[in-house]
Length: 255
Ligand SMILES: [Zn+2]
Image (tube, rainbow, N blue to C red; front, top):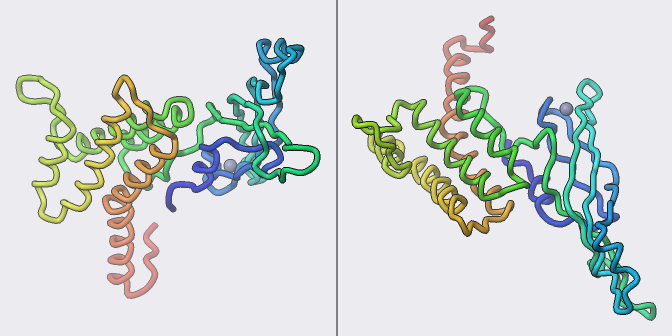
C-alpha cells in the first residue's frame, strides 16, 4: 500500500462545501475516516474588524475544529482535528451579476490520533515503526520536524542493521557516512541507498532554521522511504512466502 493519497488532499486548504478526503484509519488500518463539517470560531480580531468601513469578507479569519470517525463498525475510532481558516473568493464560483462568491478555506494543523504518514511493513523493526509514528504526529503541525523525524527513522534503521551511530571515540557519525557504510557492505544495495540518501537530504532541509518544507514535500519523502521499506522488508517477506509455498508445493499452512 503506497502513501495514502488522502493525506495530500488534507495537506492543502479545503474549501467549505468540498467533500473531505477519507484517510485510512490509523487504528484498524482497514477502515476509512469520515469527517463531519468543520465548526468555525472567528478570531476576536476578525470579528472586531467587521464594523470597519472598508470591511471585506477576505478579512475573516479564525480557527476551526472538525470531528472524524472510522467507518469500520468494529473500530469507530474518533479523530479530532483543528486548524486555521480564512475567507477568500470561491474556486467554484462563476463571476456573475452579483459579483464573486466567497468560501471558507480550512488548513489542518493537527489530527489526533495522527494519520499514519506511510504504511509500516509488518517485519520492520520496532524502532523504525516508532520513527514513522513520531514523524506522523507532527506532519501537519511542523513539516520540517516531520522530515527530520523521517531522516531519524533512516538512522534508526541503520542502527538496527548494525551500522554504528558513533565512532569508537564516542562522536556521532553523519547519516551520510552511515548510509555509505551500509551501501558498501553489499553490492545489491546502491538503489536502496539512493532512496535513503534522498530522505536524508529532505531531513537536512527540514532541520535548517529557515526550513520552509511543505507537507506535500514531506509526503514525497515518505513515498521515497516507503519504496525503500518495500524493497527492504515487504519484498523479502513476499519472497519468503513464495519459498514456503514452493517448498510445500502448495499452500504453506505452518501454525
Ligand atoms: Zn478504524
